[in-house]
Image (cartoon, rainbow, N blue to C red; front, side, top):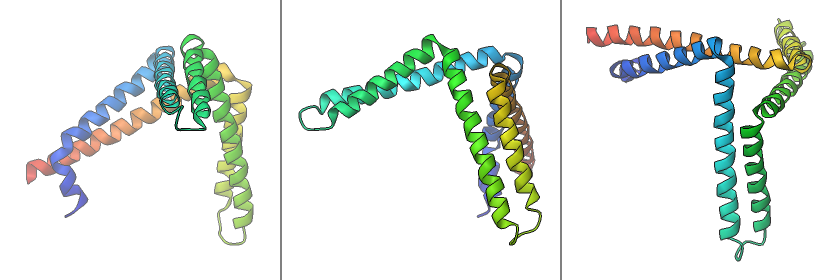
Length: 182
């Protein structure tokens, strides 16, 4: 059985998936502050649920688990992160931005180091070097422009979602035609 034949009957699911991605992307572009607020709320909810589960497990296993207090500490940290995210979402957004910036810079450095090692084995290693330089510049931009960086990140994610959504819709339309021909 070919992959396309298994997808053809489900073309409408891909269409819905693509449409949701497009709507998400448009919301990110035209309402970035609201999108950021929703994202922070989702993080806060996750942190709270994680903390509640860890705290409950710590209390429930106190008699059998000699390391129950570690679970309790982890749970309380997660609950604290949820409260900070809920009541000071800008702090969480800035911390997330700096984390992404550090990641981008580290990845950029690693890509450049790998490219220098691969120089003897492959040609066009400059593509990897260029990718590394772009990652470092992106990370630096985020560090030195955190406010603009958050909105820029939202726009990048939104643009990705729109492009991804369009590709899914186009694939769904192609599969729908194949379904009608079958």
